[in-house]
Length: 143
Image (cartoon, rainbow, N blue to C red; front, side, top):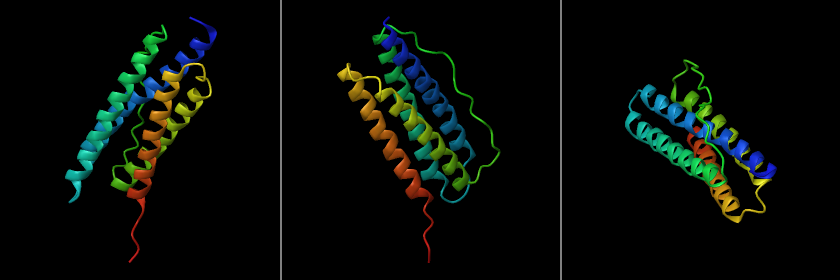
């Protein structure tokens, strides 16, 4: 494996670890939601967990395509013991922004691999949309 590929694979493994932790994080969030709006919020978190799983699978496939070895690590998911919906959404936004930063970092190193660049750009678009959606969910309507 070339030095450039090693650097990219290392970055992709960090993303893989983050996306796998996202599955755990979003499943946990879905289990902690209570109140009258529980059903649509739980579904949204389940959808986020499934998407994190799909992102992890795509990144893992790219790692092996680059002759790398996918990490078995999962980034720790802190238990904040704060389970109010708005607090969970704020945590989610922090997670999404951190993921977005990692994808931007990989983008800096993939100019010679168009397929990788397009994959990363697509992930950046999706993560950006997640951030935008959470920001909208956090907006409190004023009377």
